[in-house]
Structure formats: C-alpha cells, structure tokens
Amino acid sequence: MDDIGERIAELKKERNAVILAHNYCLPEVQDLADHVGDSLGLSIAASKTDADVIVFCGVTFMAETAKILSPGKTVLIPDPAAVCAMAQMCTPEQIRTEREANPGLEVVGYVNSTAACKAEMDICCTSSNAVAVVSSLEGEGAIFVPDKNLGSYAASKCPSKRMVLWNGFCPVHQSISVQQVTDLKAAHPGAEVLAHPECRGEVLELADVVGSTEAMLTHCRSSDRDEFIVLTEVGMRHRMERSCPGKSFYFPESAVCGAMKMATPETVATLLENMDRRVELPADIVDRARRPVQRMIGGS
Ligand code: 13P
Ligand code: SF4
Image (cartoon, rainbow, N blue to C red; front, side, top):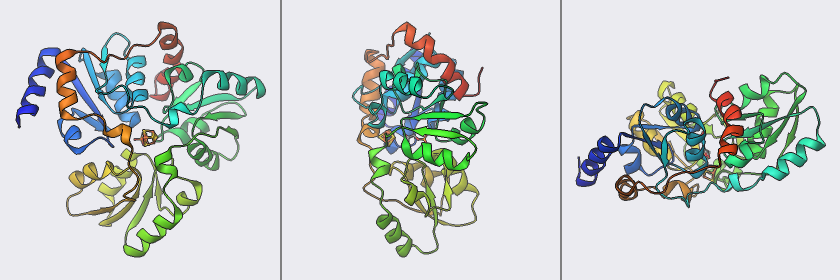
C-alpha cells in the first residue's frame, strides 16, 4: 500500500468509516473503496453498514440517498460540487404540477434526482430495477421523472402501463451517437454490445444487452464472448478489466462524466482528516423521501 493508502486506512479505522465508490469513479478511488457498485448496490450497502461514517465517492444525489437511508450516520462527500446534471433537470414544484395534471398516476422517480424531488415521489428506482418497479405498480401507470430515456425504456417493457415521461436526460449518455456505435461495431465485429438505459432509444436498439453498470459487469463475467462494446461512461472500464481478465472492452471514449471524477485519494484523505463536507438535509425532506427510497431498495 502507498503512503496515501496507508493514511486512508488508518483514518478509516479511527473514524469507523466505510468508503463507497461508484463504478464511474477514478480507478485509484475504486481501488481504495470498501464497496464499488451501481446506484442500487451502493444504496443497499449504505443502508446496511455498521460504520459511523459513510464516505460517498460519487455524485451528490448518491450521498443524499445514503443520508436518507441512514439519517443517524455522518455522510461525507469528497467534493460537494460533484452534481449529476440530470438530477438538476426536474424540480419538486414541477412534480407537484404534473401530479395534479394526471390524477391516478403514481410518481416513479429515478434515483438520479435531488432529495427534495424524492420527497415528492411515490417510489424511487435505479436503472437496475426501473422495469420491475414500473411493472409492480398496481394502478394505471406512472409519471416517470427525470430521465426520458430510462422512462421510455421501462415503458417499452411495460406496455400495459400508461407512462407520462419527463424531458430530462444524462448529457453523457445522450451524447453517445448511432454513428459512434456503428463505427465501434465495424472496428470490433465480434463484440457483444452492452448499453446503459440512459442512452437514446435508437442506440439501445443496437445493443444486445441493456442494463445498469453492475448488470453489464455481471453479463461480461458470465458471457462466453471475450470482446464487448460498452455504451456507458468510461470509468466502467476499470472494474470490467479487473473482473474479467483476458477480455477486451471498447468504449465511446468521449463519454466522460466530470462530476464522477472529482473524488481523488487526496480529497478522501483530507475529508477523513477534517470530517467536513457533511451531507445535511432538512428533517422534513428526509422523512418524506424515506418511504420512496426504502421501497426502491426492497424495504416497506
Ligand atoms: P447505475 O446505477 O447503472 O450505476 O447508473 C448510475 C448513473 O449515474 C448512470 O449514469
Ligand atoms: Fe449524472 Fe450522467 Fe454523470 Fe450519471 S453519468 S452521474 S446520469 S451526469
């Protein structure tokens, strides 16, 4: 272990802290984390940990979700400017207006949203359980916020549900074009194509497998193929290469999420030293957001 790794290990012990990192984080951050995963896996890890302190390497909505699930714990984020662009594309007022305009529809919200928006939702979902959440609805259907691409993917898998879609999107996944995919397929004709459901519909149509970051990884581990075109953020390469030695992964290299790269080993060490950059949420927001978030992870 290098110097900074040793410092972080000591501080972690001293603070009784756990480090969670999303699959898109820098390789060196993933390597120092206790858990690396997708939004659902990390939310579950945050809800189950015995640690007093959760250091969340990812974007702010992920750290906020950890705080909603574990309000008694100290949740720290290495850089509070690490904001997911899609989470800013919807407001609580807009959700209330949409709900009034569509009586009878439940509000299903993607976890990539602010805590204040989650407080307006009936149930939250991630990319790994959006289809299951929509198909489990007992009523006529749902208003799905904020991701139009994930919403239309879930709608296509649940044709009996009426879905009102929001107009939000992830700029990183939205920027992946049909031309990029066609070029990657021409360069690697034997590769299987995996896509994140935040991609445009026309890109998803070119994929063999659609799933969350963790679902893509699980597929690559068990597939008998050894080449994969992976249509998501490039940070995913590190876990794939580490988990599947001997297999090759090709990415649209321009798909980079700046917010996910803000955590570094240095910022994690400084954070554990200073114990600042705490996630604080208004108590009423935590109270109202708890039920939809707990339903998302399979709780009551
Ligand atoms: P996953 O939950 O699939 O890891 O996705 C999170 C995310 O932000 C995708 O852009
Ligand atoms: Fe948000 Fe897109 Fe970055 Fe994921 S990749 S955190 S959806 S901006």
